[in-house]
Amino acid sequence: MSSSRPKPRYLASSSTSSYSASDSDLSSSASSSSVRHSMDSTQRPAVQVAVLRCLRCARAEEITSTDHPSSSGMVQIGTNIYYCNRCAKMVGYT
Ligand SMILES: [Zn+2]
Image (cartoon, rainbow, N blue to C red):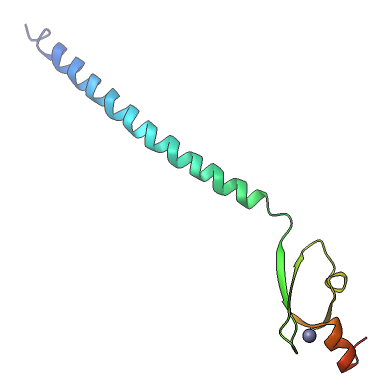
């Protein structure tokens, strides 16, 4: 008789565990999709956008990493220091 007693117990515990398993599976799949999203965004930006600000007139110019700073009308005079074409001419950089 002892073998018939744990039978319903085992069934009940297995049904509850399958319930909680599907519940955690839902939340884990949702979190994994968000991880996939962040992986997508880290893979995508091969082109970075940088803002060059003129040191003299504070004019900002947006360039992508594939652009050369000089093609956007900015003249680099130092590390992260730029003049716009106008100011570069005034200062005598071009
Ligand atoms: Zn300027």
